[in-house]
Image (cartoon, rainbow, N blue to C red; front, side, top):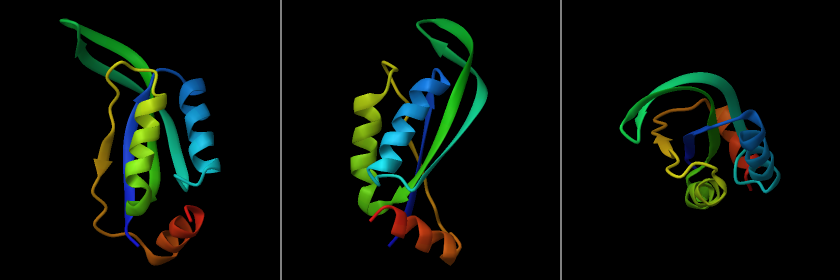
Amino acid sequence: MKPAMLVSTYPNKKSVTKIANELVKNRLAACVNITSISSIYSWEDKIQISSEFIAIFKTTQKNKKKLKEQILNTHPYKVPEIAEIDVLSINKPYLDWLVDSTN
């Protein structure tokens, strides 16, 4: 089975922690890495600078579509980022754990 990783940003730790817990509990993600970041972006014709939290969702290709739908349906942003990282290689023990954690 092939791995998949999705990335999204959230406005606060509470919102990302809530969805991460749900996704891991429901086995759509094996793991979600969360860290705080500073973002500079254009929104509504203004340059914005804000603190956000970035989440890396680790799953399998089999669960990727459902995971994207869950992120989109629960996301607090009007226009959420849901980007896929193309995983070309991953160490076998980690892949085995990832598959086992999402089945």
